[in-house]
Image (cartoon, rainbow, N blue to C red; front, side, top):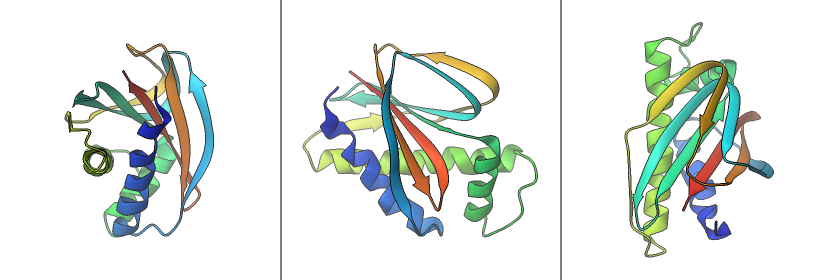
Length: 152
């Protein structure tokens, strides 16, 4: 995978997160996973088609997802990761990936994105059609969100 595919996602976080009330976006760890992702918490998968094909997978803990959903709902307390919180997190992944697609278009790379698929629970295992996943941790006001990019 070409590393130039990272920057549109980093830029999208820097564009979108302040619009919903977050102040600081910092890049954390970067690593490569071998085709399988195992997580506890929340996993949102967005498909990519067009000039690039693959998936973007956002991963975070359930507690952190509730914090972000609360911020998105103007500070309303989110005690449970219920349908409203799930909808907010799904919409955030949609906003982030759509913004990244706009960034890709400035590089003359045209992509379309699918509707997000949200899963949550313990020991979620997912396999992808790429041999490696590029994993980037972003800290949004110190809340870690992992972006996993699986693009052919």
